[in-house]
Length: 173
Picture 1 (tube, one colour):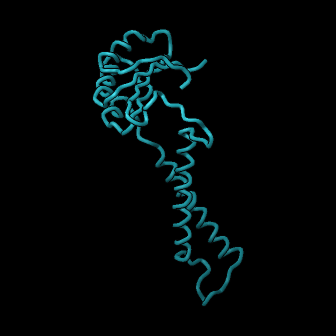
Picture 2: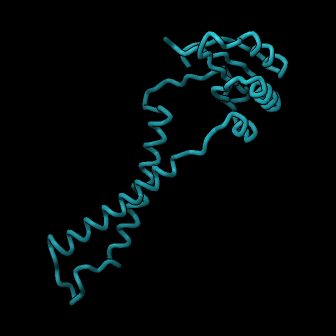
């Protein structure tokens, strides 16, 4: 069964903010809001949580740093120890540049990979926009119809009173 949505299109940001506040006041759960630029008021109203992408970056960086240190220690001390000018084989200061570079590289690559996987942005995937013009100058508000208790008539009235330009039912977004 595909997901059913009520998609309202707006021409200005103030109308979207009014609609979000009115819908939240009427106990509607807003699925998503698509805007051509960020609206902090809307983010707070619909309850967007902070991103966990930083944890992916941090864990990949720590893993890469530990892996780089262990690999360099293994190669320099255990696998192929060389006596270079009487210096100790376990010269940790010599390991820092490679460890730093691998930490940054792994953190960056893991962040990009996690972002693409989480956003479902795969090569060759066609864009599925909620409404025409939403990336240019239009604003779209999506309400998901989860069950039979969803009051579409009341939602339409609230959206119209808030200044919705167009309201339509769509499926499979």
